[in-house]
Length: 77
Image 1 (tube, one colour):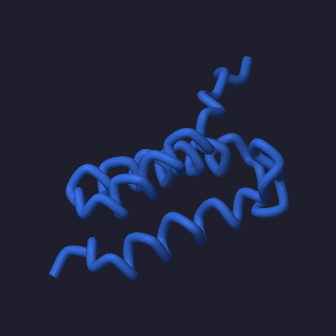
Image 2: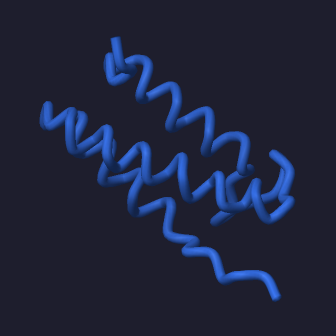
């Protein structure tokens, strides 16, 4: 039996964008990594990048989160 996946990515994305705008980058990084892990759950369950999560392709969620991480200098040095 497949586990139920927490599908609440959009609110986390909106929170991450707000935190970035406020300059609270450490908290934004935590939120963005939450998105990465939640999307990874879908990958582990066998869903491809075209699978839609909350109306958005899984691959787009990955790209949004990773782009925000890179653009805001949140990758480890």
